[in-house]
Amino acid sequence: MFASLFRRAEASVDNAIGELANRILITVPFIVALGFGAASLSSFVNRTYGPEIGNLIVAVAFVALGGLVALVVRLRRSPPPIADAEPLETEEQGAAATSLFDNEQVMGLLSTAAPILLPALLRTATKNWPLILAVAGGLYVFSLSEEAEPVPPTPQT
Image (cartoon, rainbow, N blue to C red; front, side):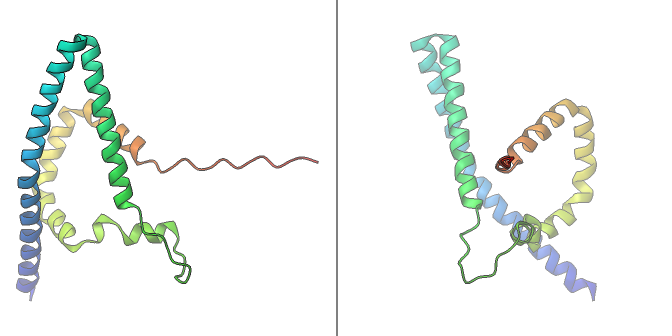
């Protein structure tokens, strides 16, 4: 009875890992090329403007690149506009519908890998807790949704 469930879970994990491996194989050459491009840009700008201004220019270029990537990711993840004829969803229903954890492959992968990875992650996290706190703080800041519009004060008569 459980054998078919285990085979399905194993197949979904294998598919998810295979897809992830393909994406990693495609991405690695681009990351290496970006590293060589950054080194070349840094050498050129340091030679042209000096080390202080050159490093500042490279840092600004990476901030701009990061902002562009963040904008593209945000635009890709934003839900399509809702037609007038469709019933309106609350934000919680819309977020639940597009949740990462709704995917069966992801949940199968997480449930299989958690017992193996969790102890190793906890050991690493306890050694590097300042870095973990800094990353968590950065993720919190970037995960904040758009600022809520302030409510204008009511005129007193």
